[in-house]
Amino acid sequence: MNIHEFGRKNNKTMVLIHPSLVMWDYFEYVLPLLEEDYHIMIPALPGYDTERTNENFTSVEKIADGLSKWLIERNIKTIDLLYGCSMGGSIALKMLSNQQVKMKSIVCDGAITPYQLPWIITRLIAIKDFLMISMGKIGGLKLLEKAFSTDECSKSDLEYISKVLSFISYKTIWRTFESCNNYAMPNKVIEGSEHIQYWYGDKEAKARAWDIQYMKKYFPNTEFIKFENMGHGSMAILHPVKMANIFMSLIEV
Figure 1 (cartoon, rainbow, N blue to C red):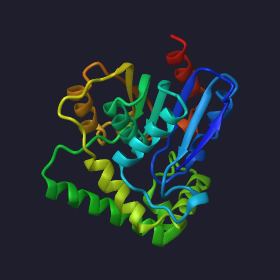
Figure 2: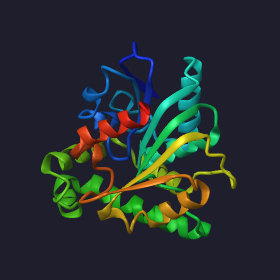
Figure 3: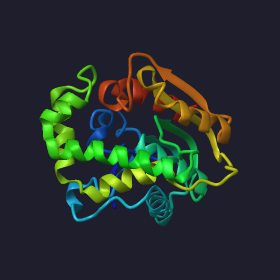
Figure 4: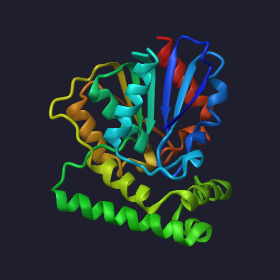
């Protein structure tokens, strides 16, 4: 797994984990606002890395463990801020539960939590998601234009997603949705972080309802922040300055 590093001279650390269907450059707008003052680490997740197209997505558990070990090997035992969006939020929560590395603050942006449903139902949901994304891979840009709302996704955004879909494998697509919906978490989670935030947009509130209930149950000290006129995982693309400012406020407390 490639880890892209910026601002190594700086003491305060951030790890940013991207969602599915994008690459590590998902953070290209927010990165210039932070790299002068913070040591930023951005993993290019397996299956979503153009430099390693022979790799497939493995699982939330394996990636969380691998990223924690990579940090420990470099004597980074405490992270000032861990951010994960959607699939990246699943990995961030798993890293938090593993307690191999301490996180002072963690932001879960529309994080996908494990379904609390019978096994057969979770598999049916994973199959539905797999088929939907696979159709996007086969149909290309024209089908994506019909499937995605143009309110938040510009044509260039859809072209970017189409580019990612063109090189990721069907195995990566399946493992992404199967794992994000079903990764293992302990029955009793020790929060292990001074500050946990869960972000979601008002346009995705219904879709995130189960995830919010999960966070309230297993991470009762979570601070929930709803952003108006926003959908799923759009902060880094549409509001990078706002995102950077929140990150800095969390770190500098």
